[in-house]
Amino acid sequence: MKTLPEPVEDVVVKLLRLANTKLPADIGWALEAAAGWETGEIACTQLGAIMENVKKAEHLGLPMCQDTGIPVFYVKGRFDSSIAGKIAAGVERATKIVPLRPNTVDPLTRENQGSNLGQGMPLIHYIPTEDDFTEISVLPKGAGSENMTRLGMLNPADGIEGVKRFVVDSVLDAGGRPCPPSIVGVGIGGTSDRCVEMAKEALLSPLDSENSDPVLSKLEEELFIALNSSGLGPMGLGGATTVLGVKARKAACHTASLPVAVNIGCWATRRASARITSDGVVYSQGAEI
Amino acid sequence: MKPLRAPLSEADARALKLGETVYVYGNVITGRDEMHVRALKLSEEGADVPKDIEESVLFHCGPIMVQRDDGSWSVVAAGPTTSARMNKLEPEMIRRFRIRAIIGKGGMSEEVSAAMKEVGCVYLAATGGAAISMAEGLKRCTGVEWLDLGMAEAMWRFDAERLGPLIVAMDSEGNSLYEKVRRSLVRTP
Image 1: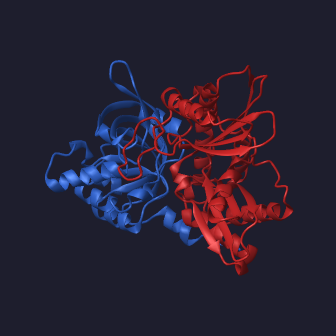
Image 2: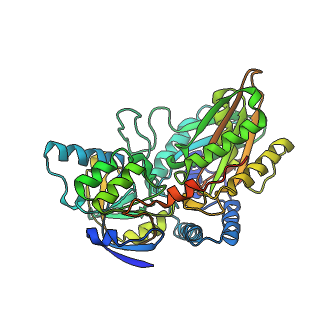
């Protein structure tokens, strides 16, 4: 979808509407494929209910899940500091008109302002580049999956086998809580904070895009097979579809460290991007960062 | 595909079999963390607690609601939330209010299962994220309690019609589908 130039606040409202009401095509295809190979009655009921709900949400233009999440933003390209205020204004307006559920609260008093704003929100990651566009991506992250996040500071001697075990244990211990079939974001290396960030960034990658790093690509495939052989299944009720995809990223780390992070995306891993140039705005649901 | 009419009796709950698919009709209330905390606190203090919590069908859900111009509410999206967050509160909730059915996702602990067995209560698994289909099943909002807790945490009342599909994932005899799946998980590598 392409539009004429429009204010950033309007772009953010459109992004939040798009992400919450329309499942990215690659995830829809993965669900259809899963429904084809599942044989268990309960697993098929779950996948059928998911696909029916996705169709209804898109048709009605309403959020597919009541947990419209905490919107995590990624801003890439050229921008100035005024963009933060514009994104915040967009979040506040989208909360009223999409509508989104007011989710953000004070962590201790639990007070809810009703706007999805509040201290430190919205969360925006900045990636400045020399490109002649501004690209805003949003990943609305629900709590069911986010609460299952794990960081492991492994020993370097644990190696890639240790990484695999950590990911498999994290996903299987989460059980039905993060709404499987899920998408598993894996961060390897970096510092502890960067590792968790990478695990979440990985969820922005479309399922049909291949990892350019052959070692990570192989790891993704092995984890995909291991997790789908586990028997956990849709909603943890048993079946052959525990994950729709595994996406991994890595960064250099300290010689004495091997950080691994797992950030799970539910089946409704919602994402949308807008590339803004002087000509207008192009919306998509598969831009990588 | 069994229709289940709420309110349920103890016998209704005890008659449900593990793995069965049901649809709920009738009175359903919502409750998450904060609703559980408040209901238990008020009850312990001897204060008034909404009567319809007694023997209810309790849906672990924080819906998106919109208020119409005449002040009434309509439901936009209402999928289940992760039930395990209420693991510590639910046994007491089930015993005190004789909850007959819990609708949620992800399952609950053995302590909850024990309380369900004792009182006659089942756990019905809804499809996580299927918020539009579930909102259609909730049909009509008939009231709200404790809106000061916020939209997600308030206790909403609904008149449901064909709410589901729901799987009997924990029965009133202490059996759990989640436990069965967990015990047979294959961990490789």
